[in-house]
Amino acid sequence: MKKILMNDRGVALILVILMISIIVAITLQLNMASRSEIYEAANLGDGIRAACVAKSGFCMGEALLSEDKNGLDSLKEDWAESELLSAGSGALFNSGHFRLHIEDESGRISINKLVSGTEYNDKIKGLLIRFLSLPEFDLDEQQVHDIVDAIKDWIDEDDETTDFGAENIYYEGLEDPYACKNAPLDCIEELLMIKGITENLYYGTDETPGIAEYFTLYGKGAININTTPNLILKALSNEITDEMVSDMDDFRRNEENNLSESAWYKNITGMTGITIDPWLITVQSNIFRITSTGYLNDIGRRVSGVIERNSGGAVKRLSWKVD
Image (cartoon, rainbow, N blue to C red; front, side, top):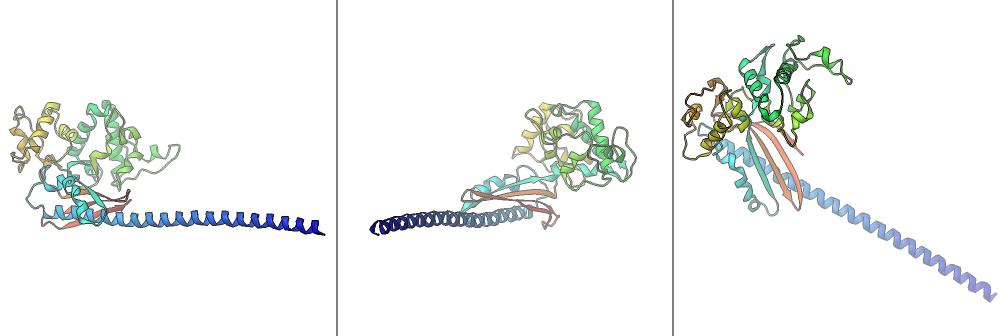
């Protein structure tokens, strides 16, 4: 009898130990889950606050552009040096800071202006051909004309194939068929759907730049010669050399030079005989892209958008995206 009682006590002890082990395991698991939820909640809160910081930076970018009413836009403007403002943004918040970047969309090629109705805009066509023909893109003459014709066919209103372009008969014959849009682009990424535009051409490679950063959906077609990237500067005329582009960029960044007239390039040594079509260039801009990234406790949130500024300084948001 005594031996049976001792065996019962042994079994009871084992059961107690097992129960304690299970309780400890469950407790540890609950603790880990609770801590994970706490961290997730903290990260969510920091993400929301970082997004608010980014939105504040975006609004500050709008304010910078709204106050700029001097009749011209250049790389010497306050909005073009928004990184300096970003450096002191931490003082505006109890915690967190933003990084602000403003780009002039009028310094890019307005791709939707390539076509008017069913016909080419010859001035934009010439600019686009010169641009894509630059050695940096490594395209031959036939490829350039194929791509330009295909872009026209994607945008124009008819279903008639332009020379080496492409309409529905081409796109519907692909392995994954789709229709030719026959309307202006709604986003730059649409270029990837157009015949001849590869991912390497669109995004760029280690050896070649991507075309995406040089195109815009907005604007009337005139290029701001004060702000446009150097590759587009070179494409403004067949006569412009790499050396001239370097001299033009140095000239427009010099605080002492007057950039109020678009023909300022003729003041550069060796360029008096160069003529850029006056229709193609301007010194005023009204469309800008603002990107603001808010940071808080190693968490970043980005807000980006395109705004239009009228002659009175009022701004209107054309697009808005929170990443």
